[in-house]
Length: 243
Image (cartoon, rainbow, N blue to C red; front, top):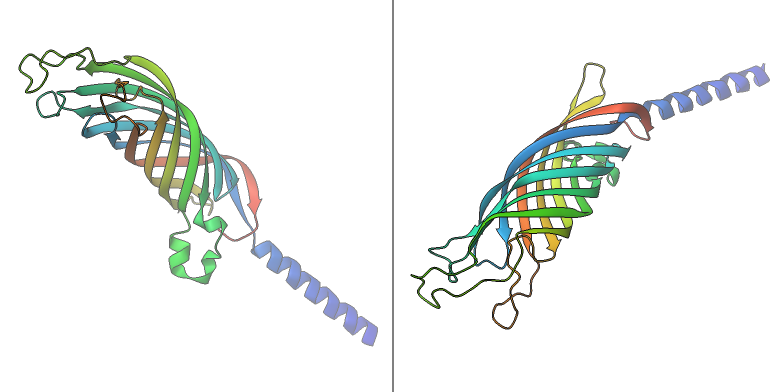
């Protein structure tokens, strides 16, 4: 009788352990795609940047629900300067395209978000790093200072190229807000993203200034702030914690 009692106790504990382990896991889709857009601002050799726009499409592979590897394509307009107000009477417009690969790590991967309601709500916060190529297409630029310029009228041409390819390094900070479908899966994502993109070259503004004449020591950068939507799909994977 004691043996039977021990067996029953053992089986009960085993089923409780298995049930608890299964309950502590969830399923998720391992891919997503999406699109979005917003505004950008440039920080280049031109004295002051201006507001432009950025649109994007993205495809991500989810290693876990909170760690992704992805590809992002961008199209937009970057601009800066003003022929009338710029100290050197310069301005440019760049209708660019870009492609990058990136990795993102979300807060939910590194914290126990069930410890508090606040952590659960912000588990979609993330940081990311990437590398890619930007295709610069300068459609409007001042190469020669106007005759009415306050200093050095008619100076030029300013060196640089209208069409260039440069490497770039995008840095991302953002937030994913998850919406479940009717079956309880994380299926839809509303995304807020701030990206600062460092370009390795002098093509973003079309000016490749001689350092003896201009302060040209910093890389050309543009920052974008976007709102997007993503849809999760693909194979269903198991995650170690409840989502």
